[in-house]
Amino acid sequence: MHVLLQDIVRFFYPHTCIGCGKELYNLKHFLCMGCIEDLPLTGFEKTASNYTANLFTGRLPIEKGCSWLFFEKESLTQTLIHHIKYKSHQTLGEYLGYTMGCKLMECNWFDNIDVVIPLPLNKKKLKIRGYNQSELICNGLSQATGLPVEKVAIMRTVFTETQTKKSRIQRWSNVAEVFDLAESNHLEGKHALLVDDVVTTGATLDACGQVLLKVKGLKLSVLTLAVASRL
Ligand SMILES: [Zn+2]
Image (cartoon, rainbow, N blue to C red):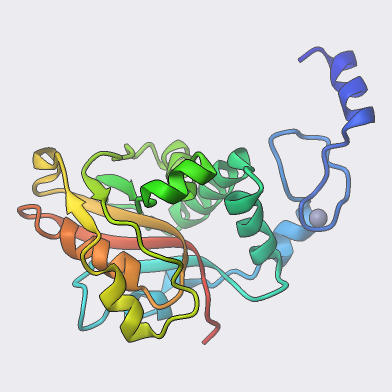
């Protein structure tokens, strides 16, 4: 965009930090330096035995697991996730995926991983939202790491009602059968990274991961933008 035109657009529609409202001059950024520094980083990428990885112990055999940010009510993480999921802020989803990717690459976290796979959204939600937020995160990750994004191997077939008010056991049984393997021969022997926005109990990722592990020789890891627990 022409500089003068950018100035005019900025005058009427200032580009501001999602965290604090401060004006930002780089249109590619969505957070100011101060808010980036204040992000509640988990540091899980530095430890194999972290809270997210341990959520799957005894149920889903994964190579490694990680979440980038802690998710708490009224937190900046919650605001960011809300913008991605409910305010159609798609470039923010990619930006956060990219930023997470760059951060985790600092400790070679993606070494040996061949492909990133977004957790599929059910068709009803996809129709309402118009996009899958996990796919946005994967696109950003792909830009940072160069890894391909796989969108067709797994399908979510049955609509499940909102799970927020159910117990862990109910959630587990509710989502267990909703994923199906589609075209997946090209994933044989690959190390796939299953990606979602927020992990709470891990039940949905678990159900999807179980289906992915039916692919011959596939190794699985899990990554989420945020984890809804601070332990
Ligand atoms: Zn800020």
